[in-house]
Image 1 (cartoon, rainbow, N blue to C red):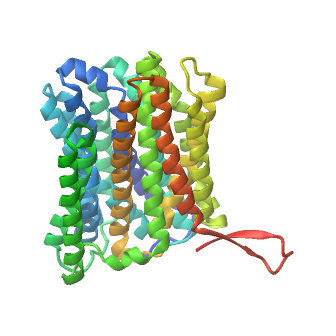
Image 2: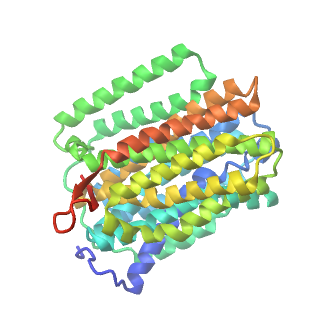
Length: 471
């Protein structure tokens, strides 16, 4: 196996391999958000009901969030390059089929398959990076570039969706196809074949129980607003039983899917909670903003997409610099500062009314959210993988991505319930109440982030001078 790269001066082949991984993560993140603006056109063209339409989004999240842990561990055991390229090929085929479908059920099925493929490409790509670049400045730089592409894909997905929907909703599915094919061909040539595979066998029972638990959890929170309380409670009980069964299995099998001892790492646990908050609160906010801009204000798909452009551009431009900041200050201060900016952005939108000001409300709010993603997302990826053994990088990556997807599903379900009940009497009050949910989750995230930061005096200087230290 080639030794991890420590030097920040990289050759053309290394840059090419990193670019392939970044492009695929961009496509994975893009698919999470890009379908949003196209939903009304899909509903009209395919004659789907509102309840079935939400599964165009939820189907992807179900496949993605439910199989991420399995995807990460499979990459460790079978080879990251092989898993990454195979899943990328499946992603391209599912994208093509999705763009050609004329039946809503088949479209949802294609989205589910795309989510499954992303559940394997995302952790495989991240673990390829963390095993290719040595821990420290080189890895931090690579991860900041990688995570910038993921955050940019998610942020710019709405913008691209607005542009493509003006041509036709099918292009939101077909656009990734040629890009995925080019990335697949480039990956075959550029990704190293000399990787080591993890030791141990396959924990089939553990994989079955945790995958079933994640699938049922995501399904439960997505379906909660449409089903009875009793059914939701029974589903939650089922999730708990499956998780308990998984823990029992992992403590007894010889080669566990998840080594439970990895959860003793406080920075890794904080990173996972941080991504639950970041992704979950933003998905909820984005859903509310889409309803507010289009349904209440009557904005077009393109107009709505452009409102999110400042945040996306800010993330794309600045995120690649976060590696150097992490080297200097550590990840914990960046996460705390980014979470504070996230809260400030949500609070800005609590001022919504029927005549919002672009200059004093929308633009400042989007800029604050862009700063939050630029600071927080790369730092979370770095923190979650630092100090983790090479043979468990796929596992750490799968845990982190699972946290984000499950967080998105859970917070979105809460936001949707608040929005649905609140807008019936007073639409503006309902929107404010739903945004408040994101504010509350942001505050929880800030408390968690601050537990990872402490101040100490630097004895070499004055007693009043303070520096950040990650614990």
